[in-house]
Image (spheres, rainbow, N blue to C red):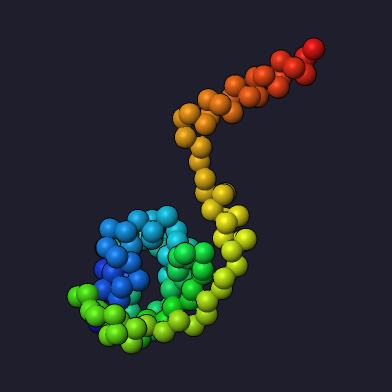
Length: 123
């Protein structure tokens, strides 16, 4: 039996809603092991391994059972097994900064600061 990745993550209560799980997959925070790029519509099988970055932790999860509908917390814990969990906060924060893109106001401020520094260095 197979299931969509975003709906499986929602069904086993790793994410509160299916749209949040799909958004995190698109951001690259959830990946199927062995695939370079993962989509929310990727199919999950029993035995699939997932890498999930959530709350400053990086987890490697093994899919033990497929759930299409959302189940209780106690049942959900039996559907997957956490193989490893890394709490390397510094590396995750560094990766988050790499993904950071300044907004319009911050870009204007940076441009003004650069122009000011260039003006001061010309004197």
